[in-house]
Image (spheres, one colour):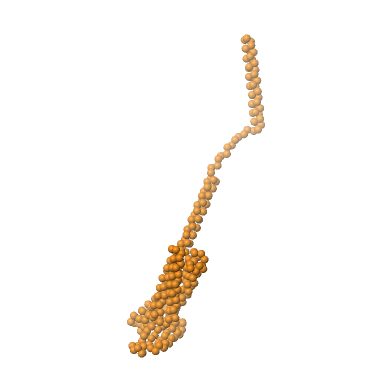
Length: 274
């Protein structure tokens, strides 16, 4: 993809996640997580509604009265877990927005393209965790409310699903959708660059190892070449060499003297014949 297309897609995903996070935050201040109406006549109808923090009641005149839960230690485990999921979803959404503003291509704060892609990928994962936390919270609350409403053996007052749960479902869906697309775009760029670097480092390592093994083989061949056997020459003693040379000279002198004498005798014989 082109850089401009990726930049606009990141902006769209960020706006989608930001809107979903704002919707989730708005549900924490909304009292209508579940509600119930008691009374058949319009003038005598009483509305009961509650959320994570308080129970409220209102009459037909519009006057409402809310009361916080008296003791935190006396609350059920279900309510403690829902509060924890709501707070985690809000905190993760906030840090996801911070990381997205740093890593997006339009802000140019993160640094290089690879660093921006990795920061945006981290922001997408943070947003994804925030969206799933919110979705688990609102789905669990809605399922519990529905189960109590349809249970014929449930004797206390029955409630229906309030508007805050539907808003939370919409906000969590926006966060999950936007973060999933952002995660795909940034992860494709950031993780691919790291895998290419890893492949290049592996290839260079293999090349250096092959060169090193080649040099080692050549060195071994050099050191393992057969050594020629030394030729031993037995030299006679110097005194014997002197004697042999003297004897040889004597023989040569004797032979020359014999040839001269023989030639003279032959000449004398020829003169006598004449």
